[in-house]
Length: 387
Image 1 (cartoon, rainbow, N blue to C red):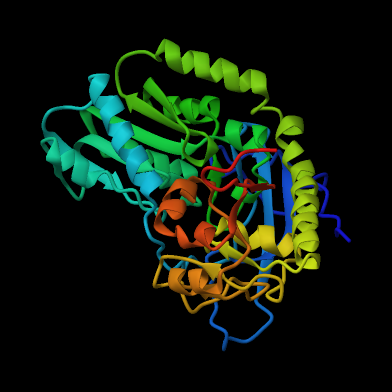
Image 2 (cartoon, one colour):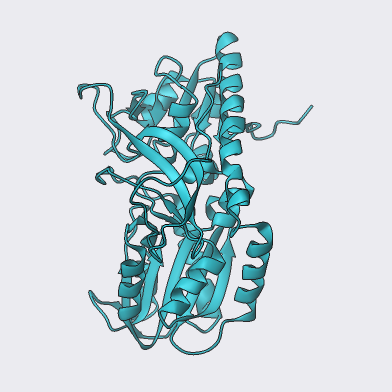
C-alpha cells in the first residue's frame, strides 16, 4: 500500500520570510513531511529511531525564489567522492567561457567551494589565473555553492563585493525548470536552501548591480545552467531567450511548480511496484550511491533494510555507516560486487557510465543497473537487444 504524502496546500509556517526579499507571502509547492536529515549518516550503534525534521519547498510570491521552508538540521555530511561527470562538466564549462572571451589570460581567481565537489581551481590556474583568498578578484566561481547558504541576499552580495571592477562572476546551478519538468522532487533536501530559475537569479543579480552577460546549458543533473555576470554591459540575447523559455514553462507559477507534489506519488508507486515484484520473484536488490537525494526517496517509498542488501559507495567516509531512517547499510564497492545482486538501484543517474565502467562485475554476473530518476528505469546490458 502506498501511503499518501502531504498535500502542498497548507499555509507557510509561522514566522516564515523569503530568504531573498523577506516577503511573507509564499506558497508551499512541495511538502515531504518529517524526514531524517539528508546529511546524517548514523552508525549501526547509534540510537534509533533517527531524528526527523520538516522538509518542504516554498515559492515566494514576491520575488518567486523557490526555497527550503525551514531547516533545523546541522550540516555534517561525510564528503563523497567527486563524480567523473562533475569533473567533465567543470572542464566543459571552462572551455565554454574561454571560447566566449570571458576568461582573462591572467588575474585573481576566487572560488566558493561546494559540498558537491567539482573545484575549478586546478584547471583555471593551469590557464594562468592565480587563486586568492579574498577580493577583489577578476574571476569569482560558484558552482552549486550558493544554494547552501540560508541567507541568500547576504550570500550573493558577498560574491558581488568580491568582484573587481571588470571582474566576472560565474554561477552554476541545477535549474528549477529541469527539476519541475522532469518531476525531480527528490532534489529537495535539508541544506539546499534555494532552487534557482534563470529569471529569478538574473533579477537577484540585477538588484545588486550585475548584468547577466552570458549563459550556458549542460546536461549534468538533468539540466544545469551557468550564468556569467559583470558590472557593465547588457543582458545578453541568449539570457533573454532562456528567461522567456523558462517563464513560458511556468517556473514563476506556483501551480506549475507544485506539480512536484504529484510526482512524489507517481514515483513512489513505481518504486514500490518495482521492488515488490522483483522481491516476490526471488531477486536480490542492492543500491549504489549513498547520496543525500536518496534519503527522503527511500523513506517515503518505505524501503526497508530487509529489502536492500546494502548501498554501495566509493566514499570511505560513508562506508560502514547507514542511511538515516531505514538504516540501510552503506557498503564498499567490493562488498557490493561480491554480493552479486540481481538489480542495483542507482540513486545518482549521472554516475551510470562511470559505475558501469568501474564495476563491470555487476553485469558480468547477470545483474542489471536500475536508474532512479526518480522512477526506476532498468538499463539493458551492453550488447543486449530489445524484444
